Image (tube, rainbow, N blue to C red; front, side, top):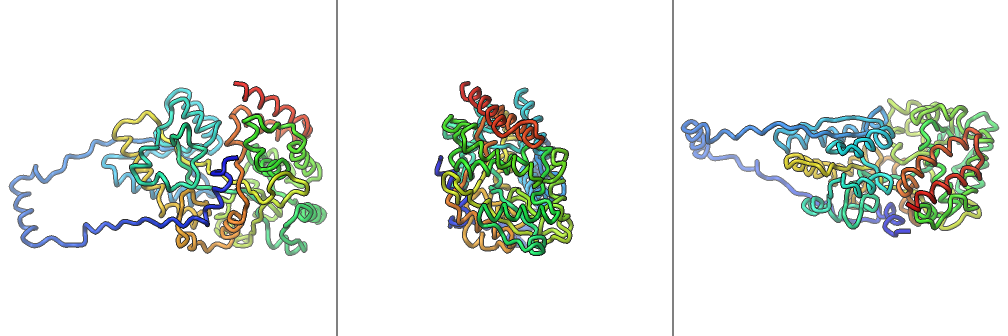
Length: 462
């Protein structure tokens, strides 16, 4: 497994890169009266000489996924970046197009890429099935010289999922890890402590079920949601290296240890540990189940943390949510201190740009990918930085929930990616089909993994 990936999240707190700052002192000195008079005379004598040519207006399309209440903090940051970029580039209008994440990734963007007409700036997922595939097809702008020009080529923690043949074709806006958010009052009322072992986790789930409380809130209409939990189960049962091993052929989907991960998920479904009717519930409904106390735990990404400090969203559960990583699995393979960690969500840029559009792209990158915006993402939205920040900057984090996430990240032995950023797109689509079959009872764990292994081998042979 690549060291850059396994250690990337841990470097967030270990990094001691100095924040670079530059002051603009151009307005510090007032012009003299003589200079003002001379300028006035010159302007009167030759009005054409003092009138700058008006910039030709142009529009650049910008596709984003920051829609809905839960994304309002990220959208506010994006709006500020858009405003600053339009100020920096005369004549520019950035035309925003907000699209739901999965629709953009699996429907709109693939069709646009196939037709050769993607937006100029767009939300892009890293890895073999997305960014690297589009880079091979020549659809993405090579950002390598731009990063060097802007002086940020060494600032990113991990660009592996956007790098092909040494060239960078996308930029992660942040990092994330996934684990269990838990309802502190519910845990206290039922005498449950934060699970540190696998036995304690399963004991907590059984006790909650007995009390009439759903252990795990879940919304599986979008199959990527249960796949988050499944991915980490695989990392625990089959080891951290297994995730990248599927696409290389080093790990089979139907290997006994991988089947064990699917079997555990199947077992929890049969025990009624997940939300009843989960296959009919979308991702936002899972959050609602958790916030209303109908589910005591929720396996989700660290990006969710900002919701729980927002009274408008969290209600009575505001600042009453904790977080823990999936405990070690008894008998699990590999280093059980590893966590899942991703630097896969970010922005890509069309390779088909006019000169003025390229200027706009450079300004957008400069205004979004910097220390200020990275720190804002962490403080306001709980998004782990994708760029190296100083210890002083990281020390500004006050949110206890974000602190607990970062503490887990810092103590982890390393990180493994989510399989949707490492396996081929056709294999990932099959994982979504199969996890829903498993949940519905339409297939067993062994049947599911046999099918996935078949599809994976076909993809690897191409």
